[in-house]
Image: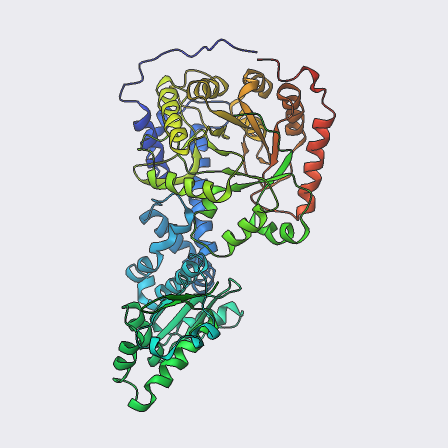
Length: 280
Length: 280
């Protein structure tokens, strides 16, 4: 047992201190800057270049795998050659600045929308954005979900002032391209449709089985979504719906959408003047 | 911190969630990668809590970046603290390395120079982390592929000095010792025999990829015979230490890993423990 420490004190407060060395190694990982090489010991048959190369390869390989796992459909849509181009450019331009790889590709949709050759086909950026919204919904916070009997138990005079709160997994995906159809086709291993410009809004949420789902939103649902997000109560929502729904049909239309959302598991609770109705 | 022998465990991986929940295989305990559960909710968290109800757990991090010259990441420590409260692990571990600098994360376990400056720096930061978490932590020796010219001592003296000054514990990764021994040309037995028996609280076993002139710690193969031999030596030297098998790629069915666990159990069973834990 070696109990005596042989560590010598040394003047390590020189310019070759720890901080400088760490920055040099990071610079090598990011750009191949060779400044670190002279500070690495020559050992055995493996050159210092090869030793550093192990780290650089691991760095790019790990980040490549993250994009591959997070964006399988975008990857398939691009094909191998463009996928590799995207990965290499993105890794170079967007070093990870978080402790979790979960967020590494957060900027991928914007990157694809801004950089050639990808920005020649804006549906690619939109497809990646749809995948990120699905990911975001997948591990959003948990919360209870209200049931229809609970809604029905509300006294009639509570309805006008009730406020509605979505489940934390609920997201709105607005797009100008038919990327959901493209996503569905590739998921089902069929040929994706040709890209087409269209205005679509999709509600994305995680259901009670913890599976992520999405549903096309009609104008009334979209209108109500924005009103709910703005904190409007039910009377205000119905009043505003008069802009797009005939007067006699407003209440029924609003209740229809709300019922659908409750059945989907997209509503966590309903607040009234006196209480919050939530599932137990 | 007492030396609590948890038995023989596995790293919890998503591929095995369902199998573990349905069949409750004979695994004594599980180790989670902390950062994988820094999410608000959803399926991974759901499975984690379900499995936690049945199995003892420890938390193993990869992004503490204890050796970095950046300030300690307070946001990371808050996430870690939150997960500790949720999981109530037997203990918390990370790696004796650095992963990030200048707000850029390599997501790799990068080696430190074995210098006085690094020892002082890391020991001080470990104390700060232990103060924040309110508990002593374990730090794992990493596989490494390069040596800095300014290193003034072998790795085993570096790690011994750090844990002694910081008053923390060691997660001794026996595969990493083998990998680094091959890459740097030292005797792994010398490393093991230099470690204070009172400081080791956990073993890691894993596979690697052998490229002839160098070895990479890939966790995608079965444990090789030389590592089993070193495990036997560790059992003789350190006694009954909680032992965990890591597999991160090419992940087999759980039964295959259970066979390796049985082999580990058999090695310890056949070890004469009467002379262990008295060597320091």
